[in-house]
Length: 287
Image (cartoon, rainbow, N blue to C red; front, side, top):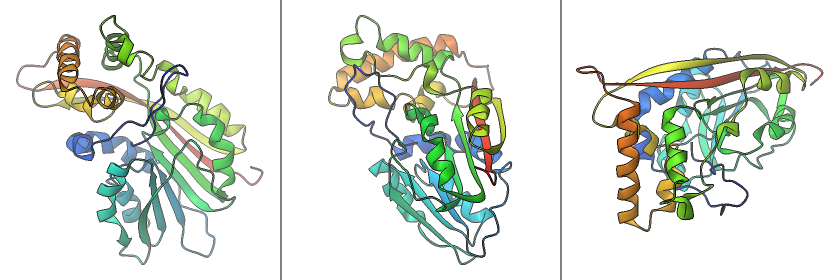
């Protein structure tokens, strides 16, 4: 979602510019991991009040509204730091059918730390990979949960896939290193399911952690390039935004590499394997 990219320390830190329309071009495939995550999330604790739910990295709000469908009486807030994403999400804000409310607000997951006991459920969908050191925030986020509340998230685990390896290698090549070197996330952007489980269990949570590799069948010409234009390629597109010629040159090189790595299946589309890592942590009484 719209969160700051993972830059190396020597790189200039600046936020990627997000394009909600491009992101939503593969809305169905992108939403499926959130639906699978949501299926494993338990009911909020019984507190005698409407549940309070936070969606960290809500993007355009397309999956945040699914929370309102499941918990129509809840007060649900989607947080993001992308003005473009929040503008798109704003049209979904308002009262929900069950007497709850859906709203959106600006916040950055790198320093978001609500008061203890503020929320009954905190979710994050495909966002934390953009936040270096995000596991260090887990204690504060668990503290922000009411007793029996849940913290649940999923992150891409495909940084060693050709789509990302080729993107990084091209950015670090002689032609592009001066402009793009050190810009992109590396394999350490996320942890393994076991490492997340260990971190969260150490905070007194009951944890369910797993991984899934989806086999997305994408239609159209150069669909993998079209996919990453909405997510992983955003830092590159932002860095080259003032130079149309350079942007087209980079995309042309990257397009050819992707065509070899992901050849289409005649008459069926292009298979795009995509690994994702999930964790659902329920706060225990001693957390």
